[in-house]
Length: 277
Image 1: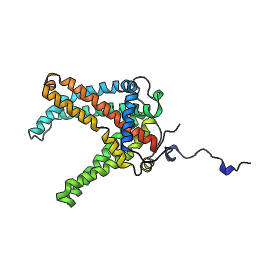
Image 2 (image 1 turned 180 degrees about the horizontal axis):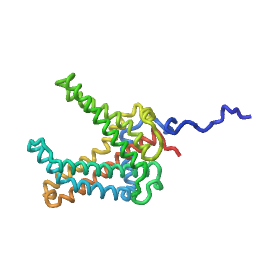
Image 3 (image 1 turned 90 degrees about the vertical axis):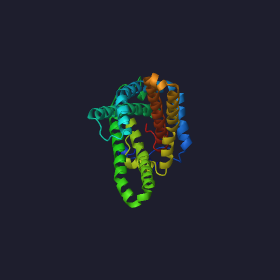
Image 4 (image 1 turned 60 degrees about the vertical axis):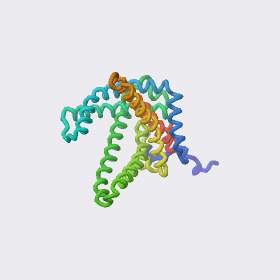
């Protein structure tokens, strides 16, 4: 007779309190970045369909706010500290729409990578609860990070004085490490898999540096590409002749960079947490 104690019973705990079921192990920086870029390359048709609408929205936002951004830069270069309220409102709206479009893209791409094509069908135009929760959670995380950095900046200046710049960068690194570890919870929100902040923190224990470096490394090639395109456009006069073409190229590069960074988080999530059936 089978011992009842040996029978594996279903986990009765709430989903957000169950332990991660990922394979675990040490993550590799290069491995995460390569996996992300390979996903973009192998699934380029799906990447194109899911990026189409967010790209249009992102480009529209950047086009709308371009003149306000130029005016702000001109005012700063001229030493002005006053900002026209109309420009401020325009820049705020531009930022909100840009964040919305990138959030929309991120959720769809994360769902595709972790749940499959059926979870992000068509052009991914349908917005649901995961999109809203992801947007609000990402904004909350960004606000908490900026607030923490602001609160730490004053004591750093008072205590370190001459070395305040070093202290500031150290604080920024610490906050970045905390944010990237908590960001696993954002991935869970996107795919509708409950994961508490404590679980995300425990699952990423000892992996903060790797996650942060891989996340930043996935962006670096695209930053260099934007810089190269800007230099060529400035040297050839393309920036003056076709500013909107140059803006579109910049938007496309940002869209691809965002998908690459989401790929890093998806690969890490699959390893550290796992996707529940």
